[in-house]
Length: 320
Image 1: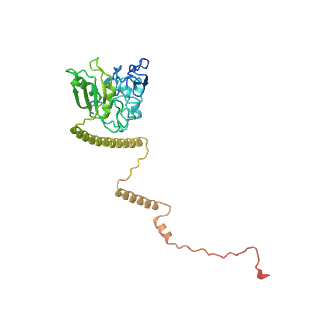
Image 2: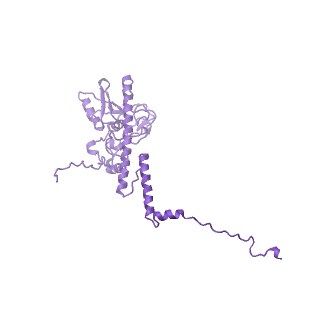
Image 3: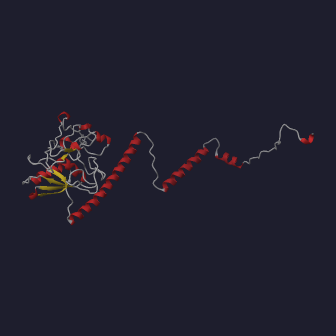
C-alpha cells in the first residue's frame, strides 16, 4: 500500500463582506449643476467642468475573492460592487466575486457585469462601451509621472488579468493599458476608476480610441480572428462538458442512457440482433417452430352460407 500523500486542491473560501451595510455610504460628486443624472452619475444643467472623485473603497483581490451564490446557480456575470471593493453581501451575493479568466465568454451585447452595451461609445469614452467594437485598451488619465510610475501602474492592473502591452506618455500625464481579453479590461476599468498610485493623484480610467496606425489596424484584425476562433473553441468545450455532466447525472440517478448509433453499420447490427431475438422468442412460446409451420399449411374450410328469407313471419302471396 502506497503511503504517498496526494495533494488536494485548495479549498475555496466564501466571499468576504467588503463593506458593513450599516457603515456603507455612497459618495456623490460635488454639485456642479441643477439636476443629478443617475445614469451618468453626474450633475447636468450647470457648467461643463468635470471633477474627479477619489474612490473611498478599493478591491483587494487576494483577500476578497471567494465563492458566492452565483457559483452554485451557475450564473456567469461578475459583481460590479465587488470590483469597486464595496459589496456588502459577501457569499450571499448573486454575482461572481473573482477576476475574469480566459474561460469566461460573454455575448458582444453585454459586458462582464451583465450590463447592456450601446451601438456607439459615449462622447467622453466612459460608460459600458459599444457592441460594435471589441475594445481591450484603457486610457489612464491623471497620472503623476515619476521614475517608478510604470512599474506601479503595471502592478496595479496586472491583478485584473494578463496585460498585452502598456505605454506611458510622460508629457501628457497619461497612459494606455491593453489587456489580452476584453472582459479583464472591463473589470479593471471599474476597479481602478478613481483610485490613486501615490495617495494624492486620482486616476481617470476610460476607454481608449482606436489606434489609426495601419500596422495597429492589421494587428487588431489578426487578434480579432484568433479571438473569434478561441471563443468558438471555448463554447464547444463547454457544450461537451455539459453533455458529459448530464450523462453522469443520469447514470447516478440510475436512469437509462440511450446512445444514438453513429452510422448505418451500427443500425444494421442492432436490427439483426432484434430479428434474432424475435426468432428466439417464437421458439420458446406455446407453439414450437414445427407446429407453426404445420398450421400455416392447414386449409381453412369455407363456411356454408344459407340464404335468409327476404321477409320472415309472413306467408307467400301465391298460397292465398
